[in-house]
Length: 361
Image 1 (spheres, rainbow, N blue to C red):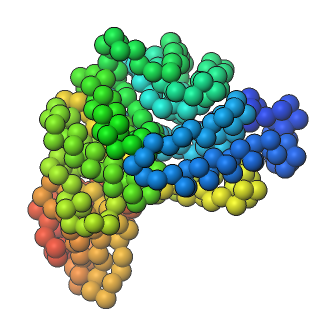
Image 2 (image 1 turned 180 degrees about the vertical axis):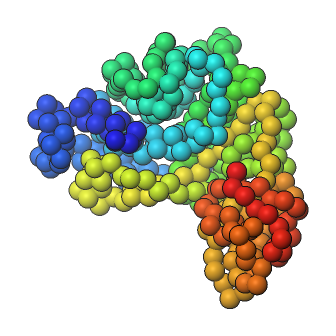
């Protein structure tokens, strides 16, 4: 069973009625059992879609039921993003401290407990009282690979709190804030990151939200030089994509085995999450940016060969392997997926010679 399906099974058992939970285990939950959640999810989706980028989003969570509906559908989607980024992080201690800002129903904590075999001291910050109720219920009952050594679910960080954390994560937070508050929030998150710790910011995979996050990335790295970008950036100077284009946006897609209840809700609501678009940045305080290049677009066959957009310390732009230069040495570029990190044997130019060696990191 996949980690995501394990998490969804827990959500179904905890949030559905006993009859609905039994139906889920048997294979498919009836529309009648799901009816209390469907209207809430439709209203939420409409609120998110109509939200103007750069303005503060009025919370669509109006009751415990709407918080439960959010948790039932969106938790596995957002947890998949967290799990996708975990390979960028490395923890040496058996116990880590985590600050999850804008935690919703405890999504990041649930994802970490699913995948990390270690103790977690978790602080969730969530302004919605209804969400806090659901988060405390889910996190206190969930049994995954890890365990909670401490759980705190609060509406805000106390002004006199001077704690720092091994991992600070904010998912779908900046998208719900106005521009000024978003910049202030990112800086405060960075200040809460311990030496050697990680700052992870995840946003919806939409053009305007992503480009806004890219500008925030520039501001953070320009003002707090102790932070090293780990993902997807392999450079710390101002983003060349923003300078090159007024429309391009640095985002990825997660191909996943969609869990069955999530897929069923998609069918009932006419949603589509069989693939997950996302944008994200991972930074480490006092870290070292990895070497190599990052693939930004799927490699394409053209009339001259294989072409793809890459970004790295020495290059940003389209590179190509001409038909006569394709070889086993450079095949890793041809087979790469978006956001793969590749190691190259020599500085890249637009046209790659057949002797250059390219390997997947």
